[in-house]
Length: 78
Image 1 (cartoon, rainbow, N blue to C red):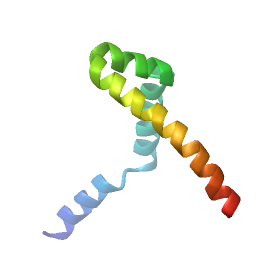
Image 2 (image 1 turned 180 degrees about the vertical axis):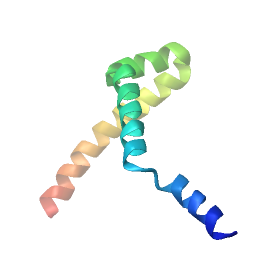
Image 3 (image 1 turned 135 degrees about the vertical axis):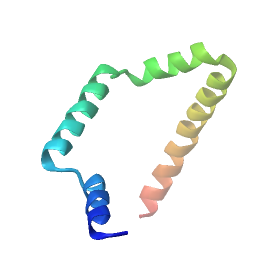
Image 4 (image 1 turned 120 degrees about the vertical axis):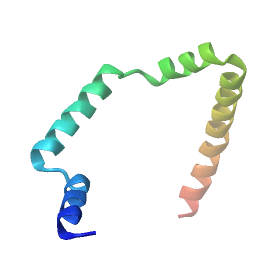
């Protein structure tokens, strides 16, 4: 690898400030265009695969019910 190839590779890894702003603008546009609520994402999952979605929802509810009292105990000890 010579100096020219190394410079080209480094330029690819470290974009200019203009390129960085353009990338950030595109990411922000995509995020705003696909912005959805958490409940909307869960309902979409249930619509696509109901069995897996119900299993994940059950696991999430169980985790919330178990983690809340455990966090109280941990924070009371600290």
